[in-house]
Length: 167
Image (cartoon, rainbow, N blue to C red):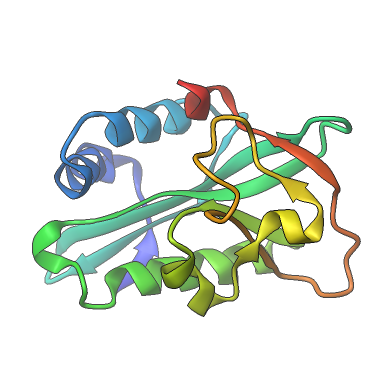
């Protein structure tokens, strides 16, 4: 079951990310984003639940364009407990994000990740559509965008990560 994350889920959410990534970097990122009302949108933060246990989490938060300061949403982080990976929970969290961001009227959703994984959800290299990766992003091929409104004019230029992503 996919549902909106609640405030009382946050201790478990941080443990999910710690287990999924094996260190404190991603839990720190999630906690910092969650603490920033200018970046964090509770209506775009989801958990995967199985038998009453939170087994996965995803959030979508604001970054912006360098020249215009236009805000753009990014899917990150996405984590699933290791014992529950490869069972569709991550895919359902990505789909919930895409649906919610589209319903919110946003034209695009960014992600930094494996093209083989995210490509099946419609993500493509962002630079091919004029969205350049932030300097902190690892590479061009992993910085991707899903266009949610085909008729929209997409912003052009360099994406700037919010402060929590720059650490």
